[in-house]
Structures are given as C-alpha cells and as structure tokens.
Image (cartoon, rainbow, N blue to C red):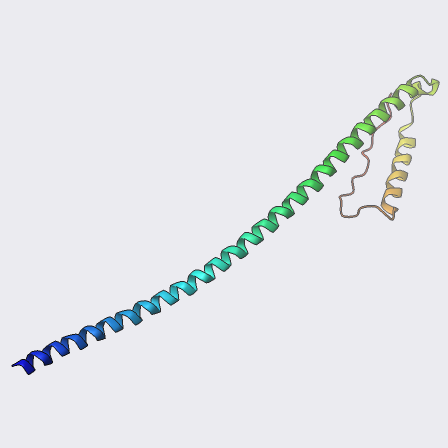
Length: 139
C-alpha cells in the first residue's frame, strides 16, 4: 500500500511539475511577445515625437517668414501712400492739374505699362496678371 501511495504522490508531483512547466513557458512566450511589441511601440512613439517637433520648427519658420513679409508689405504700403500724398499735394498746385487727360492717352500709357510688366525678366509669373486697372481721367 505504501508503494501505491508513493506512486500516486509521484504521479501528482510529476503532473504538477508538468502543469507548472507548461504555464511558465506559455506565459514567458506571452511576456516576450508583449515586450517586443512594447519596444516597437516605444520606438514608433519616439519617431512620431521627432516628426512632430520638426514640423513645429518648420511651422515656426514659415510663420516668421510670413510675419516678416506682412510687415514689409505694410511698410511698403505706408511708404507708397505717403508718396502718393506728397505727389498729389505737389500736382494740385501745378497749373496743368486742372487740365483733363484724354482717356485715349491714359489708355495708351496703361497699355504700355502692362506691356513692360509682361516683358520684364524678373516678373513673378507665378502670380496672377495683376495689371493696373483702367482708370478714366478725372473731368
């Protein structure tokens, strides 16, 4: 009877050892798969963070350029308006200011201006053809 008890105890111990071994290898496999996935996701996260940081720098550079361009345009507009005011003031005192310019003469000058602009070597052809609008002479 002692032999039967020893055999049963040995069988139970072997069965428990087998179950524990199976569980250890099963969960170790899951652990290594999760660790590999976690390492991959961490690397992708670092890569995405680097891309976002580079895009942020690029947007900041574009914003700086756009701001400088807008400031320059505003300065040019203000300078042009000041010049127009001075020219209008000077012309009003001239005796020829009261003489009406014929529309045909104004149109010829306008066409000449547009022709020069179209043939200019440094004209920005990527922009629309922003020709000067035809303004009739004051009467």
